[in-house]
Amino acid sequence: MNDIFRPLGLTLSKLRQDRILDEARQTADPVHLMRVFGIAGETAMKYIDTAHPERRSTLWR
Image 1 (cartoon, rainbow, N blue to C red):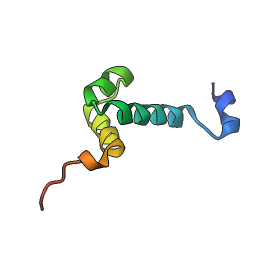
Image 2 (image 1 turned 180 degrees about the horizontal axis):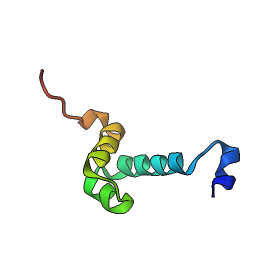
Image 3 (image 1 turned 60 degrees about the vertical axis):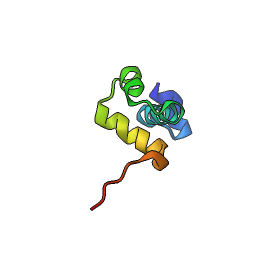
């Protein structure tokens, strides 16, 4: 698979990250990301925060 994507400047890791981010933009459901991609809850929330920065909760300091 790497031989197919390498000439395009892509790696399988980058392709997977892009796919997860695209799914996060569509669903905004961390449990869905965890089930589909087998990622941890913390990782899923990072993708959700990146895909939807307007929804990110910030705590007062």
